[in-house]
Picture 1 (cartoon, rainbow, N blue to C red):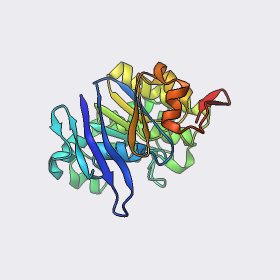
Picture 2 (picture 1 turned 90 degrees about the vertical axis):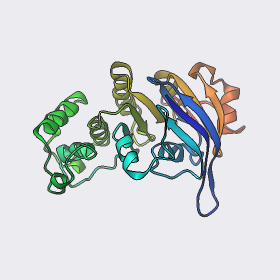
Picture 3 (picture 1 turned 45 degrees about the vertical axis):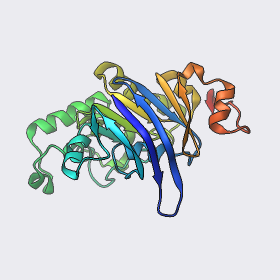
Picture 4 (picture 1 turned 180 degrees about the vertical axis):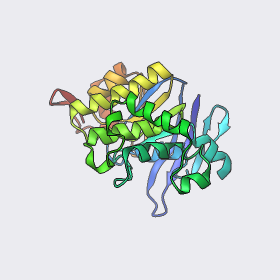
Length: 257
């Protein structure tokens, strides 16, 4: 179980990105995080694995206070937390296989990784991960030769290399069209349901929230303003998250803010 307790993040310029945010995530949940751009969604996800250091509060995962551990222990914890980014974060000039293998850096011999050497079993694991997301045939292609949807599947395969128990997905479909968005989220749903991997995913389109999430939290100006089931996200509750001027409108068949 993940517990976020009174999490606050104030950046050096005085911007308050998160303000006293508290919630829990049960093992095996698919939690959607919603809110306007700048509401604190990305900061929240990055504070959970300490890519960003919180200013106050705690993140406790399986009874370990992530916010208090030292660097060596944090590296061991991060092995079990996969991260998927909106802009893919791939090494564009490297092959798909090399990008996927980089997900194994937390386990591999650091001297070997300097010369891009990985154990044979890691190569087998990488091929299996690529096969699982349907792009094994692209293993030797350069990452920048792939479409956006294919690049995000590489990102998922890379996260799988960590053998994660938790995946943090930071707006993984924001730059994709609706068809590709469903394709990517179906892979995350499969990992959630078949592998029991807990998923925390920030999303904008409300139809995707209703289709894939088992629970939703909403952020507004860095504060938690909604925590409940997708079915409880009524028009009035929607406005609490997105503001009085917001309307639930249909865009290409998808509900959006």
